[in-house]
Length: 413
Image (cartoon, rainbow, N blue to C red; front, side):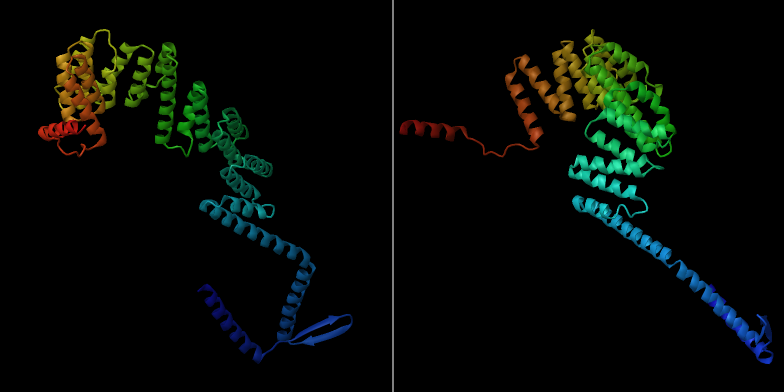
C-alpha cells in the first residue's frame, strides 16, 4: 500500500517537473581544463544519475571478492540451519544414527555450532555410544565460551543416567562457578543430593528452589517433600532411632502435618521400634484429618497397652462406622488384646463393606487358630474369588452319581 502511494507520488511529481522543464529545460555550463561544456539541466541530471550508478558498480566490482565470500558464508549457514532442522526431526522419529550424521555434516559451518554438537551428543547417547557422546559434549563446551549451561546440563544428565553421582555434582557445581545456574540445574542438583544422602546440601538448596524463576511452587513443594521422605525412609531402613528423631525435628512445621510425611515417619518409627512415637503422630493426624493409609498403619502398631490402642481406635467408629479400613484396624488391635470374638466381628463387617485380601487372610488365620478349619478354608476360597474376580464355572457333582461311578469303577477293576 505504501509502495503504491510512493510510486503514484513520484509519477505525479515527474509529470509536473516534465511539464515545467518542457517550457524551460534550464542551462548548465561547466568549465573544466580550459574547456566549456554546455548542456541542459535535464541532461546534467541524467549524467549525475548515470555517474552515481557507475560509481556504485565500480565499488561493487572492487568488493566483489568479499561479497562473494559473504554470500558463500550465508549459504553455508543456511545449509547448516536446514541440517539442524532435519536432524531434530530425525531424532524425534527415532532415526538416531541418521540424526547424528546429518547434524555433524555442517556443524563447522553453522553460526551456532554448539547446538549441532549437543544434538549429536543426544543422538549418540540414545544409541548407547558413550564415548562419542562425551566427545560431542567436549566439543560443545570448547566452542560455547559465552553460554556453557546447555552443554553442562546435558553432561550432568548423562552422568545421572549412569549413576555417576560425584561427576554429576561436580558438573552442576560448575554452573554456579560460571554464574549460569538455572532451574533445571537446581532440580538435577537436588536429585544428586537425594541419591547421595547429602541432606545438609538439600536443606541449603531449598531456599534457592523456592526463589528460582522457572520452578513452580508445586514442583518445589514436591521436591522438598520427597527429600524429607527419603531422609525418614533412610533412617527407618538403618533402624536408627536417633537419626530418625533428628530428621523429624528438622522438618518444617507445614510438612510435619502432611499425611504422606506422617505415614513415612510412622513406618520408619516402627522399623526403629518406636511404636509409641508413631502412635502419637498417627493419632494427631487422624484427629486432624481422616486418612485411610494412616488408619491401616495404626492397626499395625505394636502398642504396649493394646486395650488402650483399641479404645482410641474405637473412638473413631461413631463418625466412621462404615469405614472398612478402620474396622480392619480395630480387628488387628482386638487380636493383640486377645479379644478374638470382637476381632472376628470386625473382620466380617469389614469384608462385607469392602473386601480386602489382607482381611480375608487375617480372618482365615484367626479361624485356624480358633479351630474352625472349615471357616478358614471358606475365607481363603473367598479371597481367591476376590483376587480372580470370578467364581470357577464348574458343574455340580451329585452325590449319588459320584458314588455310583466309584462303585462301577471298583467292579471293573
